[in-house]
Amino acid sequence: MAIWDLFSKRQADAAKSGAPDVYQYDDIPKELRVQIAQISVESVGKVGARSGYYGLADPNNPRWEEIEQIFCRERGVHAVEHGDFSGERVIKYMAECGTSDWLDLLELICVAIKVLGDDDQYSYRQEWGVNIDHDEALSEINYRLRQAGVGYQFEGAQLIRVDSQYVHAEVVKPALALLTGTEFSGPQAEFLSAHQHYRRGEHRQAISMAANALESTFKAVFDKNGWPFQKGARISDLVKIAKANKLWPDYLDASFDQLTATLQSGLPKIRDNDASHGQGAVVKEVPGYVASYALHLAASAIVFVVEAATA
Image (cartoon, rainbow, N blue to C red):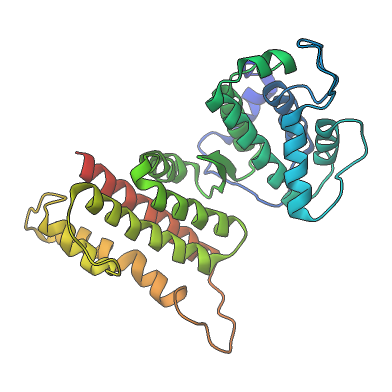
């Protein structure tokens, strides 16, 4: 279904014009829950009661059944709600559940939508009344989250916390797009893991994985180009190898030396100070803004390295 620009929405947008992005992460508005439920049924399919397209007897939509089974197994519960069909129970539960459970189920739904699109399952779409393209559905889910001021977006294969829509659109999203190739599967997994830790408030782990993703990006580029390096090389060694092989142009000016210094000491320094070593007897709390900075620094560096390698 197309997004309709209602009068009330235009008025609300005009009132917010020029205001910075302001997101919250703890409350899922009722209207958003309803909108996501509607998009989910349109893109995953009807919850049950087959139309008889193939004359099969099973009344339960297998995609909804898989979503419910995964959630119940991971949460250690037998069922989420009462109802005849898996999808019915999931949607009913999402109408009232806590934020953490709602986000987990939303992520599972988004993955199911993505898989349906990737597999192009025409017979399933016909049988279960899927009437919206998977890209359109995922785009609308992200739009509804932004519209509601809920700071999460589905990118790649998981929900990612968003602090600034501008930074997300200009830095994080391009980094994920550049890491989609098979040669970058390692750094992509580490970068997504960093965001997963960040979403859970595990800031030390988020910083560590973000730095690992940057190091792995360098190594993936070196592997692709046949440039030798030690497997345990530190970031300073990796930057030297990149410079020696002219990964980026060497203009021999102070400004470019500063860029090299940022790659070499920016993110790794944060990791070494805040994340990579034992914290001792006293619990060491890493502020969220430090983790956010580290993630964005990693993303911008990854974009720089990959684009330099493909220029």
